[in-house]
Length: 252
Length: 252
DNA sequence: GCCACGATATTGTCCGACAATCGGAGGATT
DNA sequence: AATCCTCCGATTGTCGGACAATATCGTGGC
Image 1 (tube, rainbow over the protein chains, first blue to last red):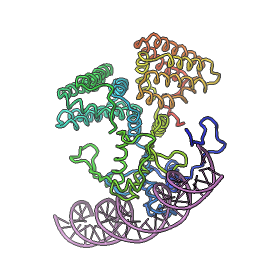
Image 2 (tube, rainbow over the protein chains, first blue to last red):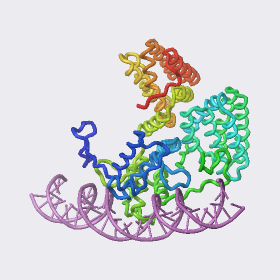
Image 3 (spheres, rainbow over the protein chains, first blue to last red):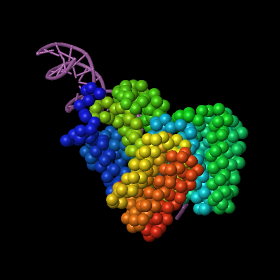
């Protein structure tokens, strides 16, 4: 690569000293305070004008810093509020980052499906041993949502909710985090599938009811085996719908 | 919680309609173009002024959107350059972010182990059907590294390498990405375990050799079942080492 | 062909301004 | 007294313009 003075292997004596813009330093300073527990989750940040005054920079600069922290999930807004508050980097943010990374990697439907086949049955098994009534009610609601959904959009939403609720019921945060990107990326494919083969939706509802029943009985083995069949059904439905398994999932 | 008009259980008839500010919509639009491959990694973004013109917003607004994308790892600057370029959020970086999120969530050993029990066996099964000789050689090397490792540090490194190599061999990028945080977070625990029960290391080597043998034969079922036993062995070793299963994994 | 050297474009930062709207202080009502 | 309504200030979102620093690029000299 001509014009590139950097050699790949030779370790340069000095790092390429990159001048950090003010918005970066402001963001770093606030991040420090958050990670150092001086600012705790739930606390409201000072107003933009106040921050600008304290840092001695313009409000625009503060705003750029805040957008960074916002995207990093360190600060956020809770329900139409105006003030920004400190938040824990939530599962949602991490999950969406994973989703993007996978989407940019041109992950195919079959890869996602394989991952789901690994994760979902075990999750169901764990959920069977741990689910309490609120979790079961939430799953029931998700199934009902699928059932009475008019459009495929709402139906898919319900399916996603079912799987996420299942992960929740498993009480395993690793699985909760793993489940979300998979279902999120799978949902466009699932939607196309439902659009093309309407009877697929009833199959989904039936399978999910069976799983829920197994959860109610606390029967881990049955929950696992039903879930395995359920996930395998996804693939079959996909094939029936005539979509190639190598289709790239599109980033939502 | 006084002052909170939202009830937790009642499903609100209408969603809390959040007005998305312009910088959010701009960021979303650019993100779409990136995820939709209209903008590919390495491409330079239009200048801020150009973007402002195209979106019909002020440059400040564009800048706020760019800070978001920057923090999300979707755009960035390479070496003192001025223009922003589209970057691919690296898998390693994504994995480490997931690890941090899990660590901040105080995830316990048992949760990680459960996730691993779900992922690893299926990964092994897939690897059995797909692994080529380079992948097998890499796995062989990882086992050898465990075998001849002096300290627990190197041994753990070899184990991690084995699992990552297995995910690589499975050809499934979702599993590759999922495996890394799990092994990474598990490794401190694994190390303590090896420190306390030295015979555990030989058990690991034996199990991994069996798995490798199954892979060579292309026997998916056998690879899966050996891997299941292997992972279960981890837990047993952990219990034998006398460490509580609820120990929080420490963030690296 | 390669390199120094301006001209230009682009980014980083600042300033000031204004509309929309959230939050809270009172005042009115039951 | 408790609740609701109204109103005003504070805060955010967005705009337009400005200027210094410097990366980029075309040009001319060797």
